[in-house]
Length: 156
Image 1 (cartoon, helix red, strand yellow):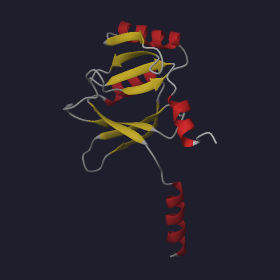
Image 2 (cartoon, helix red, strand yellow):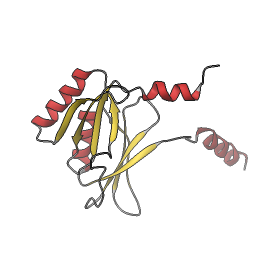
Image 3 (cartoon, one colour):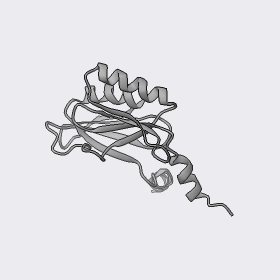
């Protein structure tokens, strides 16, 4: 009994808080791992086969924070993170990096919108469209981290 209680307390202490993931259905898990690795700087941190569905499930992370993109193998995509406004946003280190990744995606035959300089607070950004229709936004100059930090620790 004591061991079980200790394990439960350890799990409770390690339990995630706040936003942890976004899940996206994909038709080709390996192609998707390569896409997010190349254009979002993410790598596989967890992989399994779901026992109930038989689908492959992968967690991807850029290792900068405890947040993952969950890819779930699906036979078809009935809804994508697409359209004009739906996207997964990833900040990169420079405007040149936004441009470099856009050129690479275009050369690979992927649909690219931008880059566009929208000024503060949106910054310099572009969309690269995943083969299943999910929009990946690359940006430089957004201040999401700073804005969140200011609200987490308001000035005295």
